[in-house]
Length: 305
Image (tube, rainbow, N blue to C red; front, side, top):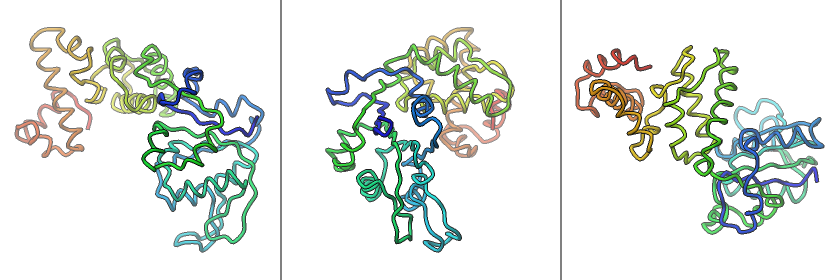
């Protein structure tokens, strides 16, 4: 059915009933809206909101809208995403992070097919198909009292379970290439490619944040690389160089003693700067060197600010 709610997991939950739906093509992970544009609602609206990115009050206004004067700054009426998506699809990303009071209000929308804008006295009828995504195990969230059981069963009509990225390492080169192309186009910069060493490190990393973490890592690397077409390991974040990563020692022990030493030193400088949030005085203290010494190393290794 076009209006059947879909719950997409980016982890493997403990529910035995999910096992038959454990693997869906990786495009599901990249763009949940593919299901919208390849279904009967493709001519209708598709809107999305990250439930964990906004405060409770702001999330309510975004989803349900508000009327003029409802709160400070509400200078005019505003449609909510549910009203904008009427007849189409709304993607509720990270639904597992939705505040409890908002869960109650969302449940009413699902039960009654109506929304009430903030500050309004009337309800508005809406007919929307919901796709909800989460990186959390909602079974655990139910047990902890963080997620409503009645809401869970309302959205859990058609669950899709995506194995964590660490269990499908063969997808990492494909996903990385996709994100390189997509993000390069977004930035209006030349196309780029990962070097063999960089790809080896990415493939060995555990990716606790799954595909979104990989996407963020690629975007960060492209930003640091400027117009460099070869994205080498020097543009990767410090976490990728975890000593537990089997590719870390293999890559960093190749070359002469001087090359290995410089590589380790450069990585330590980058990690210190990341830990210090870019504060060079703090970073130099972490490294146990004077600030000018840190500045010299930043210049020597051409580390981006």
